[in-house]
Image 1 (cartoon, rainbow, N blue to C red):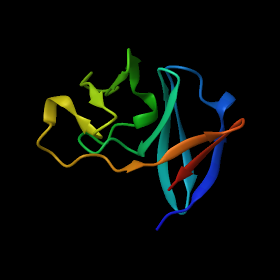
Image 2: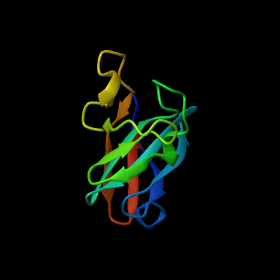
Image 3: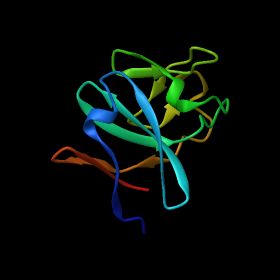
Amino acid sequence: MARFRKVARVADVPEGQGIVVEAGGKRAVLFNVCGGICAVEAPCVQHHAPSEKRVICGARPSCPWHGMPVDLARGICLAFAATAPAGKYAAKVKGADILAAI
């Protein structure tokens, strides 16, 4: 079972952007979407595109290569909803730090 560890500071992830972090030998992307932080595995499962380069439009990032929207709550590409979802990690903000269970 993964434990929460500090992976970034809130200031490191501007609104509407994502950054790659590593913890526990795994890579994840932290997104700051609509004032909330979420963490998904990197890279994109469907296209192997660099997840941190996803373009955020509203509350949904899109694949940087194909423009397909991604539902972060379910970890799926909406155009390929039948494929395996991306791994999601629990993330939370504690003070100025972002903690993730990766």
